[in-house]
Each structure stands twice: as C-alpha cells, then as structure tokens.
Amino acid sequence: MARRMWCCVAVLGAVLAACGGSTKGTSAPATSSTVVTTTTVARTTTSAPVDYGKTYLALAKPLNAAGGAFNAAIGKLGSNPTSASVQTVCTPFADALTTFDSKVLRVNWPASAATDVKALVTADGALVGDLSSAQSQTVLSASSWESALSSDASKSSTAANIVRADLGLGPPRS
Image (tube, rainbow, N blue to C red; front, top):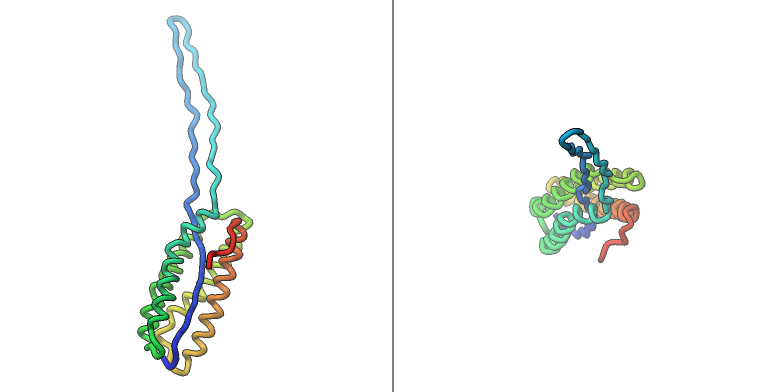
C-alpha cells in the first residue's frame, strides 16, 4: 500500500456468566413407635445478583489484549506495507471481535443494556468487515479503506462506551 496504515482501534466489552444457585425444598420424615409424622422444611431460593459490569469486563479482556497487539503490529509495518501484511495484522483482531460478539450475545443482559449491546455487536460487525477486507485493498483504495476503518472503529468505541455506561462502568482507561 502506498502509505502507512495507522489504526488505533479501541473496543471494550466483556461478559461474565451469570451466577446463581438454588436449593430444592426437602422433606425429612420423622417417626416414633406409634405415630408417623412428616415434616417439610421450606427453603427459599436465592440467587446472587449478577454483576454485569464485571461480566462485560471479563469478556473484554481478551479483546483488549488483541486490540493492543493489533495497534503494536500496525505500528511496526513500516511506511509501505503490502495488503497481505496488513491483513496478517488485521485477521487476529477481527477474530477476537467476532469471538467477543458471539459471547456477549449469549448473556441475558438487563433491559437497560440489551439494546445497546446489540448496537455494539452491529458496530463491531462493520469493523470486522473492514478488517477482513484489508488484503483486497490497492494503492487507489487504501485511503478510502483507512477512512472507513477509522470511522467504524470510532462507532464501535462509542457503542462500547454506551454499554459501559449502561452497566455502571466508567470510561475505559487510556
């Protein structure tokens, strides 16, 4: 490609599996020599509250690592990387985004965050498309591709920040 590709993609997201437990009511028969008595012990079912913020952060951890590796690798490509070398850097990050999105969609998010999580996955999908098309770029299309990548990364980051806010998390650390 004719010029250096600089991409600073910051996408945060994560999910922990919901925790909960229940105990079933039990009955214990008591007997005497002349009378049979049955006692039922009632137990309440309790579930530990789910910390969706921790869930999100746990899912985002591998994605953040992949994003850091992506940024470092892009910076090492030099001023005239080939499309193939850019694709080699983009593919692992695209794969990490896809994995993250798959996992985040499996969580039963609270209503206050569910729509925004879906919007994040949609934004990530556009970014994955950009990352996956790096190898097909030419000298003539590289500038347009970089612009789309930057725009889609910004949309993804904004969507992630909205989800973070929904879950009571502060902005990501810089």
